[in-house]
Image 1 (cartoon, rainbow, N blue to C red):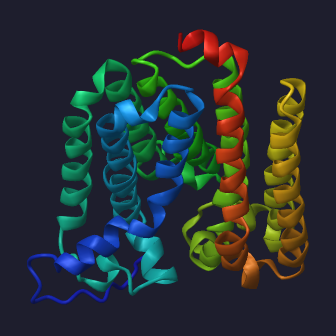
Image 2 (cartoon, rainbow, N blue to C red; image 1 turned 135 degrees about the vertical axis):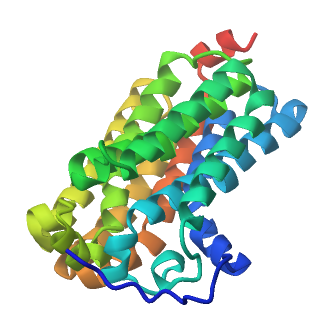
Length: 308
């Protein structure tokens, strides 16, 4: 299929404002927040590790997440020419091969910046970069399947970021089981959050053969699945917190989940029109629960024993 790009032939260098748009600062918050949750859950005194914490957060958002956005936009440029032709690459504000060059350069910068984090942090950054390229780039291009692609993003944005934050704070080691379990549950829930971003691209995805959940299941079916995944993941968190004798934390997350459930009911009635609404107003309740779970975990006997 040939797609016409509105490229301005006179442009030979990218507009700096277009580069910032390409890196999408608005998307940096979720992995930065997950990294912070992991650091909190580790149960160590954060005041003694502020430089390391700041570096980890900076790498997670403005570097790793930003590079993944550049990679995605480069390999999605044909789809974006249909769905969102005003984006920097299809609009020509980032001309020629500059989009690919930025994606490669920013990825390399991530690895260099991660060197002070030690072997554990560097390995986590390298793994996140592998997933970001595998998500967008052929031959793997996980995003072609909504089940696989959203799982990959949920794993890296939430789970891997959480585990990395905790592992670095614990002195470059794999966190204990309770933290791995919480990170896994919130990664599963993030699969539903990622689906919310797919409703706006249904037309282009369908034409370009990308089997997102809204394309596979229809708008209403995908909305139900996304909502169910988010609710069940949080129900799992509530259950483990009760089992770990953290009833007040579990109750707080339960209240946040009920608020989301009410919003999800409205979302399912009109998913294409309300997907961004739920993402903007409902997801903050989800991520607030993540921090509550992190504070619950940091005082558990297992964590106290690890940090002695």
